Length: 236
Image 1 (cartoon, rainbow, N blue to C red):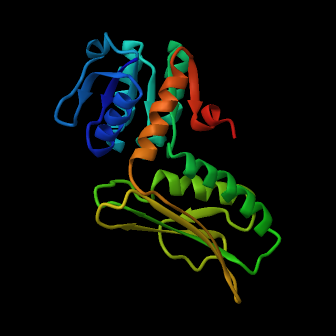
Image 2: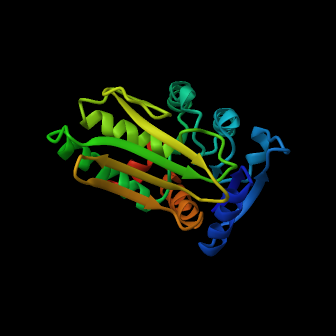
């Protein structure tokens, strides 16, 4: 396939490496200093979007205008998701979005829900979360952390909301965000008890796992119409 890279930072370059390994070509590279128009995607089969939270939704709409399917790995734009969903369906366009394209993280999402379902019977354990990313990551907490928190809240009735800080409120789930060096991404969910702690941890070793997942999602999305998430692609 001929694939547009919308966002050509570290993740975009990692995606390009995976595309080459899997026999695809790049139609256009769109960096933050290079705005693009729908006509720029005329020779493109599908776009992969890893830009910034402030640019992502408008980039998606440009893809729709060009009739170009788009896979979106940027997070922090979900306040506009209802608008994007409506536009995709009204225009018969296709989008697949995810807070994280790592296969391991998506297994973590599943295990996180299962653990929360178990822990609702053990109120002596207090859940909390730490997420650590590189200093260039703009959104806090990460989209992955928000997805994990929402999974806990849906299964653990004693938690009704998450906060991006330490909290002593029994109804609030604490998420601590740390930005350090060039860390690709670490997420740790811990249930703290009086006698022991129970933790789920995912630690990315690099960006390639995220890039490979995004490229495989693009291969899956090609030829489809509609609004999809990574769960549609992975089927678990």
